[in-house]
Structure formats: structure tokens, C-alpha cells
Image 1: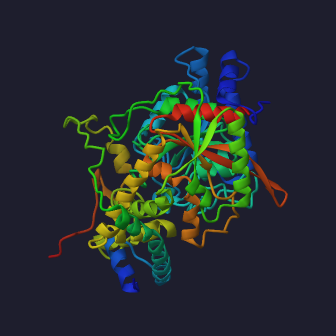
Image 2 (image 1 turned 30 degrees about the horizontal axis):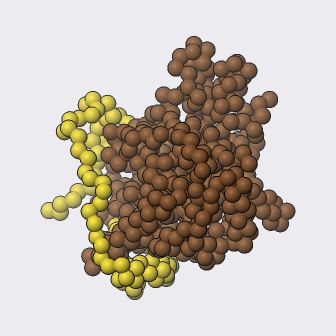
Length: 95
Length: 473
């Protein structure tokens, strides 16, 4: 792994990193991956026994479980930027 | 004066219903302890301003004999990643420093119905990532037994609040040992229930296939009482399961000691000696003890630190500064994400997001994530097989007693190794409890040690039974 790989991951994760962070993560993530690599040997020995998980999707009736508007004020109060009851965001499409 | 040191839920409940003291008296005693001790310990991020009002409401219930439960008026601390409607809940992160919960978690709803009194929210590692509570964005918690040492983590504030007599019981969470390791470091009892036994609705997710809300108290009985109130199936959490049967006394219990766990690198001599003594104690109590084998258990950490970052990078994608939480102004909408996430997340959180992004990225998903899931299944199978033979598995809770603040924080991998004994239960989804097993003396300070009992899915009953036997010995 190189610095440019860390930069690519940071871009995918939508997070800015300082130069110092990039250097530190390059070293630490390398060490962690070195450690977790041992699972590859186990699978090589045991074989690829991938299974269907026990947990299945649980579904419920497609009905609203709340009363319209009951949470609006609480949710709107947490908006970082707003206009009235609207969440305000920056322009996404350029002209 | 209420003697909080020796107080249990049942003792407090009896005194409250007999009218020896009121819920307000009880809450006041704990608030005074917090005032006296918490400046040095820092278990709490916030002590609620309405504690006495809550206690007054509990007193009303007791006075009117209106739906009085064992928890009515009992002062509880709540980890900062569990939602209480209208109150700040921050996961000890700058990202949510001023965020108010918009609904009650199921656990809180149940505790409110029972009449519990919430004292405040306790400190933790940011978004429950760490093993020492040093990753809190608001400063570390100190171990009540030695202020120069960590309380463990991530529920360090929860364990310290109980150990420091600043709450009668605590609600924390456990993803890879987060209630058990701090309980061991602080000399209290911490239960990680079966995966799904307690609804996760309203618990901030970290590793969704591992997380469990977990009670912490001074005695097995206190922990059992709280667990009894908060467990059970919940329509709001599709992974939740029916409440297990809590009382089924079984005679002739058999304990297995995994031989692989005794060969762990970095297992402190003091811990090993204490563990051997604990094994002898169980033998004296009439338990049959035998060596067992869990062939894949020592791969647990490698599996955990592959799957956990992957789940984290997905779960924490929601924090983008748009709908709630910290927002930093960038050049455009997308730049806002980059800046908000940089400003909001601490070092360890960012490290795990980047690592998880790598593990889930095209080309590596199969090499890491899928392989880790295969080994997770092998570990589950190992446990299943062993529990056909033994009722319980006994290990130390942590490889060492509480370490110094600052000692391990600079090296993430060293800190990860702290979880060696606790992670397997989360991988397999089985219940596990850490119980106090004595002390060791270092530099004139008595530091607590703990042992861990694990049992088969939904068999918390046997943990309570064996734990109580051990406790009474």
C-alpha cells in the first residue's frame, strides 16, 4: 500500500485527511492487515465453506408506524441548515 | 446517610417501599457521590439536571402503589450511545456533540416504564471504538481504583460509574468486550447477553452483527434484574429474540477451559495465577472442570478486526453533516461531506473507516470480508460442538489488569490484542459475563481482576447461576 492508496480510500470514504494522518494510517493499516492476513491460511486449510446465514430478512406490513408530523419538530431542530421546515442543501447541479 | 457502597437493587427497593428513605434521598446520595468523585474520575459526560424530578415521580409511584417495580427509583447511568428522547447523545464524538435524540431507544422505554431514574450519560470511546475510553473526544475516564490507569473500554464510564459508587447500575454496550473488559478493570460485573436478547433499537450502531446493549452492576443479581427488564423480542429490531428463561437451576455443572486460550501471547503472569485460583474455586464449589479445545479461537481477533471495520465504514457513512450532527462548510455539497467528516471524527474512528473501506472495496471484498465470514462460521461451530459437552467456558476476561493512561494508545494493534478473550463471544453471538475474581497489588494500589464465563445461546441462566456461586464463595 502507498500514500496514493490511502488517498483513494479517503476519497471513497468521503473524508479529508491531513498529511500526518495519511502517513500514520499507511503504517498502522499495513500492520493491521498484516495481522488479519492469517485468516487466509485458515480458509486455505479448511476450504471455502461459504454458507447461507441463519438470519433471514424480517418484514412487516407496509404501514406507517407513526402519526404524521409527530416527530417533525424534533427532526427539524437537528437540521444544520434550514429554511422553515425545509432542510437546506447546496446546489448540486451546475448550470 | 445511605450506604451506597454495599447497596444493591433489592436492598434499595426494600428500603424504598418500606419508606426508610425516598427515591429523592437515594438520587441525592448518588448525586453527592458524583459531585465528590467525578471531577477526578470523569465517568460522566453529563449529569442530567432533572434527576430529582425523575426521583420525585418515582416517589409518587411508590406512594400511590402505582405499578411499582424492582427498578422504580433505582439510579442508573446510561452510556452515551443509547438514545433518550430530547437529551443529548453524542457517542463521545465531536460529530454529535450537540445532537438531541429524537426518540427513545427500546431499552430506555422499558426502563422508563419500570420507573428507573437516569442520572446521566457516561463516557466511552468515540462511537464505541477502543478499549480504554481514551478515544473519547471529551477526555479519558480514570479508573476509580487507581486514577493513573484506564477504566477499560469502550464502556469505561459505565463501569467506573458503578465502581465509583456514582450509579447503582449502568447500561452500556458490548461489541467485542466493551462491557466485560471495563468491568474486569473496575472490579464489577458486566454481562454481554446473547446476540438479539436485548433490542438494539436506539443504540448507535457500530458493528451491527456484534452489538449488544449490556448491563453492568456490583452483583450478579443486580445485572440479572436489569437484564430481565430490558430483554425480549422487539418489533423495532428484526434481529431481536424472545426473552430467555432466567431461572433453571442445574446441578453438576461442567466447565471447559480452552487450552488454546492459555497459550495466548501477552497473558500477564498475575492474571494467569488469579485464573488458576479461580478454577480451583469452581472445583471446590463442586463444578467439574475439564480441558476443551476450540481450534479456531485464536483467529478470533483477526476475524473481528476484518469484519468490524467493514461494518463500521458502512454504519458511519450516515454522518455526512447534512441532516444532523456537525456540519463544516466546504466549497460545495460534496466538499461539505469531506470537511464535516474530518472535523467530526477522531483518529481511531477515521482509521477504522479507512480500513473498512479497503476491506469492502472491489478486489479485496473476497480476500478479506468473505474469508473472515467463513472463519467466523468455523468459530461458531467450535462453540456449538463444545457446548454439547460442557455448560460453561471459563477464561480470563482480559490479558492484564488495568494499564496506565497513555500506555497503549499510540499503537492500535497492541490495544486490539486486549480483546483476545472477549471477542469470540461476540463472533459466535453467545452470552458472556465478567465477574470479579480478586485483586493484584501494583505500586501500592489494589487493581481488580476478572474472569469470564461463556455459555450457549440464550443460556444466560447458567451464567447467573455459576456467577452467583462464585461470587458467594
